[in-house]
Length: 475
View 1 (tube, rainbow, N blue to C red):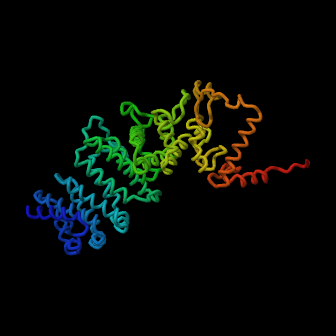
View 2 (view 1 turned 90 degrees about the horizontal axis):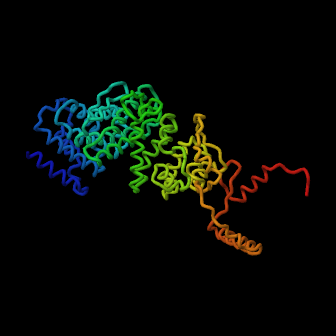
């Protein structure tokens, strides 16, 4: 009880960076490591009465490491990451150790976040990905029915608060350890990432104790899925039995993909912090669609179903398509590029198909960046199956405004009442205004090169003149 009281006081004091100097010495750090059962002994965790002391010591270490660069360096010298991995192994199959596991994982997350050498040590020397994946699996109590398929119990009760917190801390630590894991170099690595993706699929399909905790769990699962090589994400979908799910496409279970789509829409509806909250799931879905045909076709049917009503602009409405098209003109460059890229990939990177769903005005930014203003398609290869237009769309197509992407009511022509002299006067007035804006460098007239990219108007005009064959007859 005395140790617990002292550690609680130290935990509160350690939130202040200015008072940490006496604590951040090797000898004093060793005292905390011993109290947290992070010394070199291999003794199992048997004395339940010691657990509160271990938890408080780990909390103190979390605060100290977070607030002190000296403590971060000492952690490397004292081989703290290896000792934390060892403590995690001691916790396996033990009862009443959820708090110990949670703060052990939090400390591993902080170390891997704040010290790149410890992150490298965890990844290469300590097999941190395997250790943390095992801790995540234990927190979720997964039962396997196949190599990469967890048992799905739709009547299962939600995770407890402690189980959810442990899972979230493991996901955060795994995110740091698996950064820059874009390529798989061996069969063993491929198995490890597929195994991890199967666990993350299970994460997406379960619930936490509250709606906020469920969203936090799913958010961290999405972040970690972004680190998994996209070739290993095929385990997110699996062959489905008749009674297993109603969400099937080509015989594949699409439950996890639907959760990701719902998660993305929920983040769009929040309307804030798009760069931090929305871009990870948008990027993940885009890469999945680029590589996995069944995922792309399922999401295309959900996000861009065949057009029927084209009386409203593409950005007006409450469907997922409307929300994504609105993001194509968002003020945040990264957000609008990702939203446009996602829709472009769903359209198999075909410009004509994208324009049908978004209108030229909304798509202009993406097309300019990709050098596709003149039409065509992107660099990636997709299957040649064609989209089928509805009868309603075919009948309305001749009247659709290509810029706005919808059928507009006929507008009266303001020039009908003008004389020829008035028309010429208004035309010259417009020319002079544009010329003044151009000379004052408020605008720069641009043109489209033969390859579809944009350039200053004078340059594009000269290029077209060079490309045109010279006539054999002179005027």
